[in-house]
Length: 239
Image (cartoon, rainbow, N blue to C red; front, side):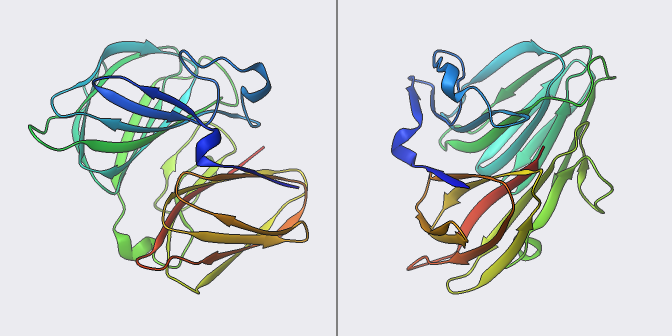
């Protein structure tokens, strides 16, 4: 079963310092019918203005993944980690028993666009961890590249949940096949460009900001259909 959630159906939060599109209930957006998709609690597409940010604040018992789409995002936390995350970087923060962190835009003139994903861990009370890695475009081109995973995917950041997060850049008319398992869920979010996804449920066209929530067994085909440039998307396999 495929459910397409269009960009227009997301909740828009537009403040002077940050513009956010929420795929699930978050902050001032409270919709009990759209609270989560399996272990996926939040999927936010943010644009943070220059010299602005989210000051130090706490989290616990969450697996938080951040993907920097464009610009630079500065991270600091009370574990002693400091990083300027360039576009193409993925950050993993396992909040566990508690972590305080801040995310800011150090640029004087450019916005930073980043996706932030919240997942429930498979158990509470884990030791907090942080890690980050840069993934070059060539590794994502016409490929589903695992960038964060609860299994032993080589090169992927380690998650405390049975979830795998993939990134991909798909050229026009190129296809990827993804055999979804019966007991799993798949969440696809189109960062830019155009995609066609199909399985026994039918054929669906995605534009920038659209998402597909997929359940039950589905031999999924994903095809790039952009008129210019590549289609960039994130795919999350989760229970």
